[in-house]
Image (tube, rainbow, N blue to C red; front, top):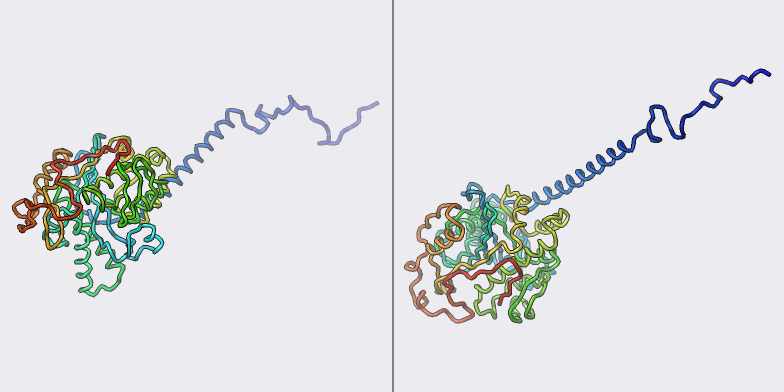
Length: 426
């Protein structure tokens, strides 16, 4: 019998081993090695995309933090050193000059938005050495009687007033020229205030200021909440109706409202304002420890959250690469910051106000010794610079006893706080 003819294309072709394809490939057309390489490339691409997204978000947030030109053209430190001036305004207003919401003011226990003005009640110069050495932070008592620079008037007054006086003078000048836009007046007035405050501090200490960060009262509140609380330690229990401070003795973690009360309290403290500077130092020491222990410096998402919080209340100088500084600032935790309060010579009265008597040349020498001469040469004293012989002479002269009230005795040398742990303070 003859073989049955098959229609073309209907017969069964002979296959090789099951799953084999022409060319010897895998069932999916790729070798295991090629498949692994593809997965690796895909994973790398996704990681780069995620990193790029985080970087983009970070850059967008960093650029949204209010940038100031107050340091344009200013002298810079040498050898990679960085001096950062931290300015805390006693202001109940936001960056546009609008009152903070009543709900926030209630939490701050800071009174009406009409009080407080624009005094720089917190001034801390943070020196970060370029060689990676231990950083140092110097608190400047707010009532130090010094020459005020620039638009602040050039006379002598409490150092904290340079900002507010210069802001007011600039707003008056612009108003006389016909400027009526409230936000423009606020914006340009604040720029004049920053410039005068920074220049006043620079002249007083005799060193450059490379960067600055300014925050209002709400800044302490939001920062502490963003960190999930800040650890502090008190030597004894305190209760103060003015600031709202009500804390037991010992180590404890403060939320935003409590943190602000902690750094603002001066009533009931033996050293008054001078003890308050130690509270501010202790808060910063606790905050940097919390930043490090929470992994904020190394976790991009946590860092972004922190910067997103900061943009509500913080103003920095334009062009400051915050990401690079944050990497450098990671070394500020773990005991690498030494906090101290600049010394005063005594107390006096000026136009009915208590002031701190200071020896400006002594301060310059002390800063030069602590920071080192490689930072910059000392800035010459401004005309009328503070000196014991040029201070007000009256019954409230430096040799007179301190005025009544919770005032501290003069400190011959800076009192230091080690930022390695959570220091216990009064």
